[in-house]
Image (cartoon, rainbow, N blue to C red; front, top):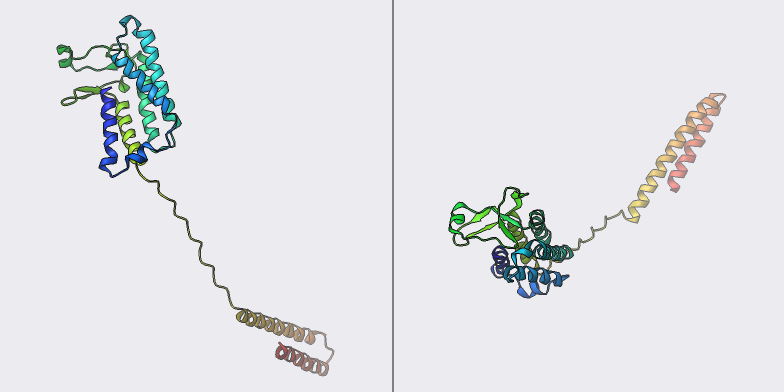
Amino acid sequence: MLAYAIALGAATLIPLVTRGSYVRLVMAPWRWAGLLLGGFAIQLFLEYADIPESRWHDLGFGLLVASYVLLLGFCFGNLIMKGMTVVMIGVACNAVVIAANQGMPVDVPPDWEQSGWIEPTIKHHPQESDDDLMFLADIIVLRSPFDIVISFGDLILAVGLVDVAFHASRRPRRRRTTEPAPPVKTATARTHRRRTRRGAQGERGLDAAIDLALLDLTAPDSGQRETRRERTVRSSATSARGS
């Protein structure tokens, strides 16, 4: 519980250090808060309640697993919050190793064993030879002033809580609306008419050239070719002036 208290304390200081708002943090759209309160209540009960050691592996272990189910349910219900995915990963790492070993194995330093500083509880017990997933167990020793052993899940949980507190204590940013691109200027009607007229004149000139070529091929003598050529040239010139 001391590791969780330190993580929560660090997350609580984040709005103060980063000039966030505790009001926004509290009034954030949290979901299923009852699961969070229930999970913490069960763990506090197991920490301080006088449960007989003979009931640790049935009643105590069942309540411990139930507390982690409630905590994971709260994390799942609030995955929309930034940083909550990291919190859920940290809680899941601790839950997996606890479920596999009926409690959290602790790699106790030799000097702590000699002083009898640590004692088994419902949640924690000294490492045993048949414990599994020791890389997720309490193997990270934090000496003075903390004098505790934590897990990688605790570190991940602490980072996630800080991330959640940072983002939840801030005003959500508004998305910038992209301005529409300015319309492309089109040619004026007058310019369009001029281009159309030039195109029509070019087409008429091409038609006249084709007519002259056909005339040279089809006319029987040179006199008729000259007469028809003059008529074709006059016709194309009149059409050009009219356009």
